[in-house]
Length: 484
Image 1 (cartoon, helix red, strand yellow):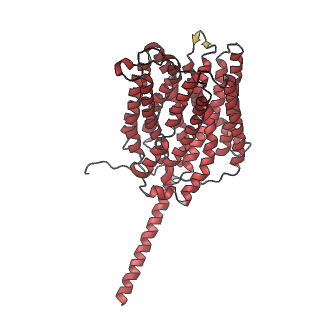
Image 2 (tube, helix red, strand yellow):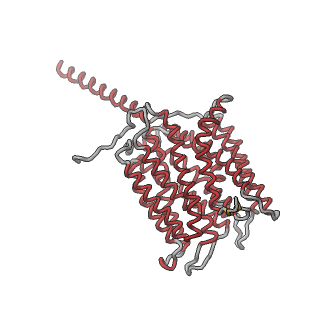
Image 3 (cartoon, helix red, strand yellow):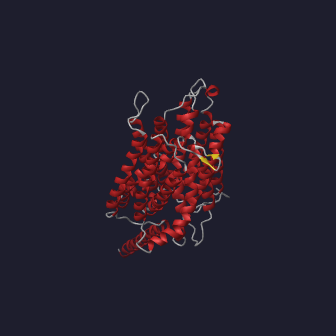
């Protein structure tokens, strides 16, 4: 169409930062504000504020709430594989992100209506299920596309900036998370669930608008069509998948423990002394420690810890992940010890949770950021989003495991098969076994690094060679015909 601005279909040939990055990072900060703000209060809402159809308080048990929260978390990270396939096969990353962001917004609207059963006529648990399902489809569907869309903006000349951008990309996630985790719990106690869940919805709308504003700045890597399946199930594609799937099984256990900072750790905090300088910290607000530490740890690890480690051994991605998995063990063992003190009738101070967050955040830096970047580099050109979807399945699997455990330990009379101490000890042992097995696995991993524009250049070179061969064949045919 005349006058329509065309999108770039390959990374800009520049040495500086791609022009679309500020829009993507801004979108991610606002979207993460909405997601983590909602998730921060979800456990407290289900165990303290949830109503029945008559508008009376009818909360869930802690085991039931953990099952719901981690079931939701599993769904959020299960749907990325479908968003990835639709993106790489038919629609491209940009169109998937925009369309599913609208679904995401409707989920937040439904979430704000959960606390109004007498107005909607819908049972709060039913409305809660609908809201979480819409958010899971919307948030989950765009996850692999956003992170791989970041990587698509970089070519050979500015590829050296990619690790730094992934770090700042992660920084924006945690900046939005920190602000919302401090603010939304206050809105919950002062204004009620409808306002507390409504504000994240407004931020999601802003996130969608911010991403749309940068539409002409992005490099839009075209969908592969049916060639996506040919590449995915080619020898190269299957080899990349087979190399990464075992890695993701190990990472799943990390997420099983890490995501319990929003469930088990919040429940534990309710039984602790939360007075800090005369101010009582709300259990949900403690989750803000993690994103604040992430923003501190990203430059600390990049410019101090990793270079220091490099003086003693080669700092490879798999070694970073291994160290992170081992750090997760004491990160969960500490709350297990706190639970023993609570069971003995003590009221330990919440400062202990800070040190647990220090450990698990350091583990997150080494496992999550590294895995995100590593997954992108190990994915062939037409499989970037698909591989990101596979990576996010590790988060889904970890949350599914936690939801399954909490479902299994619930007795019909409302009691639990495990004490809280045994619950923490169980997951600590699982993490230790996983970390040891990962070290063995890492010795046998073999992979290949792929860069977007290098592959595009190779593809163009192959097309040129084919064209030249066709020209030569045609000339030979014409000469042969003339000679006869």
